[in-house]
Image (cartoon, rainbow, N blue to C red; front, side, top):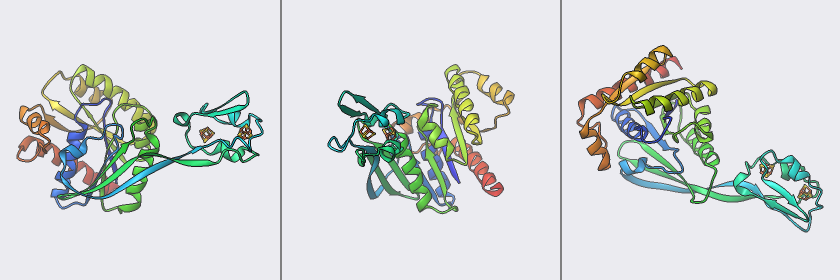
Length: 287
Ligand code: SF4
Ligand code: SF4
């Protein structure tokens, strides 16, 4: 079961829920792997200790121009849907940051003047923590496309862990391409939000995105007790399940800011995680 923890914006408690839930579930005897897919700014590792068992460099494919072979027909420019190749006079310019690696230009070039070559995009680090596996995917500085690394990370998890393992993914925030890529490949999404006007605004965007993608989802309210009841009202009107409420508690913030797992020794947060894990068990039974 692939489960992503997502949110309409950063800073709502997505990583807090991901790391605490992974540790909690593993503590109940489940096999768990947590993958940090917030590849532009992964930070789950800050809350975990363990041994790095593998480091992998990842690549994506982009075309490279062979000037000698090129007949300057211009077909590559018209073929590329992403405007990543431009013919200017007697030069072909390739913009790797816009290339989606679809191979179309390379395959359709009659002169075979656009061979694809590998470009390094980031690093995946596999760690064994105290009681579960953890994978961090980190995009190289200067790389602009998160989606290829995200796809490779999910594929790695799918290839290594069988269906008995609960696979949690700390999703990138927002509603753009990286989140859509994650959501498409999940069985279930947990949307973390806060009971504030900003939280509600971003939750609505996230709900719209999830409904568009078609992946089932439910909500966890973080910092319950601040703000107002608008998020609850919205969820009721839209028939969206609220799985749990994590209280707004200074102790949680203090443990978080020191890089710890806040649920340990915190009864109400543990109860919230139990509710989420019960829902996951229900999903597994129905699957
Ligand atoms: S399609 Fe091939 S031959 Fe034609 S301009 Fe592009 S690189 Fe050159
Ligand atoms: S591989 Fe696809 S996206 Fe990249 S430049 Fe060629 S046609 Fe455009």
